[in-house]
Image 1 (cartoon, rainbow, N blue to C red):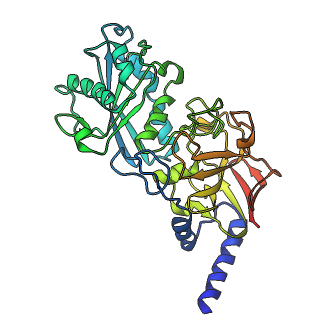
Image 2: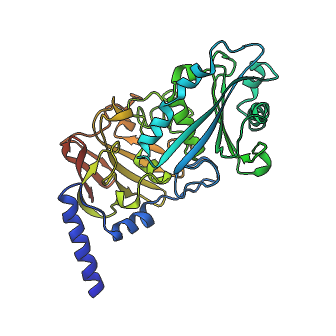
Image 3: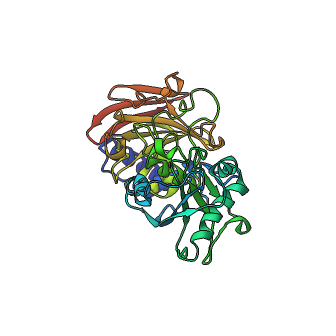
Length: 383
């Protein structure tokens, strides 16, 4: 009984502090609750999947990520641009994106070898096979072999092979990944589990193309839909893993939590009753970043605050509500922005809730009580 009384006092004090503003910290008890109850498990047996824990053995999402950049062209499409020109498409925007989104916890070093490496076959040959595991690996391996005598791959985490952007036969640039040492990229110094290749679509997406593909090197899935006409109807304009051309490409709070950019005490896990809490803008460092309401063992409703800051400068400001379902694989909607998800308009720009607006999902309601320059105060009620 004594322990129960202490617990009730702690909870009461917590609710009071949360109502008093965003500067309050979550208690150790709440942080532990977030860790145990709200860290949706990573259940899919794939290298690319959402949930906890983050897959190990691919690219690091904390500290330094060293990416060696190679440039390749072809007999049928020889390069006419300098490697500096092509490199400037991704540098420094990709590194800046991750510095901002990780709150400085991840530094991406793009180490470019400024030489056009001529591959042995036509661009059409590589374009046909690049979307299958073995041909894609061979494409990257050939580029690495051409550079291996002059490039030190000893500190390399990811190999980025940039194709001549005029080679339209290579339409897209996917990610290669393997946790099996037998099938990894081999260099004189080490074996590398992850590679990225660019395609003709680089001309359309620009530097944030690399930001999207780098997300896959951490194990994050695609958030756009693989089937149907409205491929962006799941997350619309939000999240780099949905589209590289959205109005709000910054990572969702749940993804940042998985990647280690948010701490447990920055996630408020709420499973019963009513709470008022102020959420600091996801774009800024510090503060409580999200409320998460578990729906079941693999699904949760989350609320975070979005502001016109940095790469999110075109977003509508407000409290963004979304579902996470770690049973769904990439391309099938593991994250679904609400309430815009019910709309036929695929970009969902109006999804963030502003002061006075309410959204309900099953037995949970979300109401925005106050909107400030860099935060939203919300009331979450579970009936």
